[in-house]
Image (cartoon, rainbow, N blue to C red; front, side):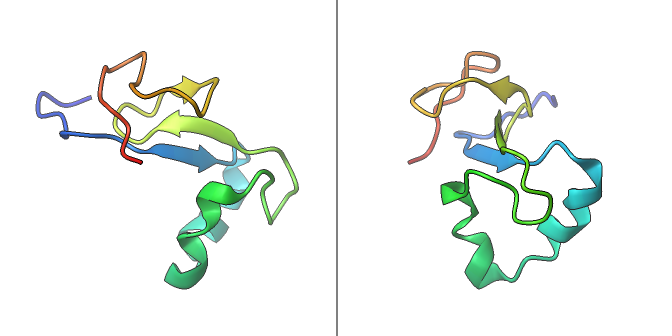
Length: 76
């Protein structure tokens, strides 16, 4: 993490399969905005994992208001 932290972070859903990352980065913008509602990866069908957009640490609950690792508040 850098010395300059953002004011807020987002809960991100990611696939842990490295082969899927290129596919995720190529999603059209109109589809990418719905990925936060996905439960499973549309490319490999693995369950998606939560992470903090600021520190990239894994999270166990989508109900957190603040990241337990970096302390930033999550945007809604």
